[in-house]
Length: 440
Image 1: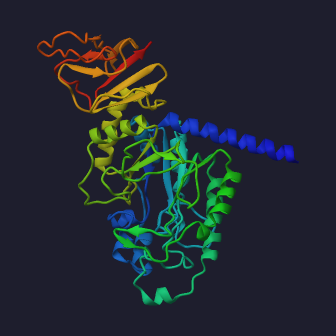
Image 2: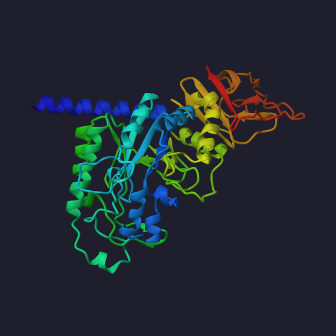
Image 3: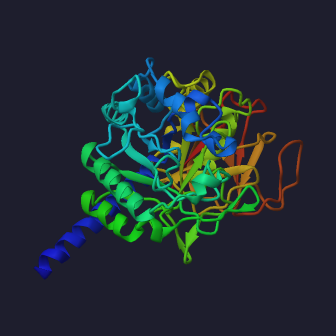
């Protein structure tokens, strides 16, 4: 019996090691936030901000009918953008379930005019494109009658609701049962993104009363159940206990994240326009060029980028998101090998640049375009050939003598270990120019 337990533990550990390697290979994924809030079109936190009671929010359930839902089209866009996996919301904080849950609730897709599962078709469509499938599941539930009111809850100012006796243990059973449904009903799930614990949370500058954490969720038991059901799954860090990877949200870490001094597996979660759910009047979309620089910066720091889209209530991606993904795809179609399977390099890049490396190929990403030359410390004698990645045109290189005089646009005195690349005056017409350096 002891040997069998040890073998199982070793097998589970091996599966997780494979999952870590797979995550680092993929580097770029699509996050999908979808729920009843898409009908309100004021993003996924609208019910919190507007303190919407259940009866008023019910109108979205009664009119949710995504008749233009085409998950194959979403998967096409993701694949063309160079994304290698998807993480889709199964339930956000509002409590609405995008699948036909067997638990005791009328707040699921089965109670809408649509009446059909949404999670399964998404998983099937993305797998058909060879993309990995991950699930997001909210620990918070603003609709469940046993979820205790707290400082984030839409009913936080409702005296009658606050006076109700609610049993978090009963909610915890519901939470665990739904996670079991998801992990037994949709095939292999590669990532599980829980969201979120907040025992001492500051929300928009205000301390949150009644915040919840690992004890409320039964996180130790829940994580053990997840591991038992899908041993190769990766679980994020928001259960209030350590997970497999960390998830900085809406910011780019200045340095590669570490845990106890050890490099961490990490995934930056980012939006196109600052909203996760569909937000009709949001006009603050980031440019594709900026998003690509964020992707490069993430990979250079050994992380993944999970870029979000928020479908409309009819089941379409909004035009800005579609064009953004297409623009990213145009760059990725020629530069993908500097991202997929690539990671940090041992060399220090020059200012306004990033390095990624894949095997013996070092990729120099030029965030700003220099005038006729870029100088690479530590690479003299280390590079056998250099070319632009977008068209495989040669980039001349030389090692400048430390005692040579500067002349016109050439720079002397850069040091004997510095490799100089000779660039054209005109910047290549790509979002981020990349030079591929073949190391000796």
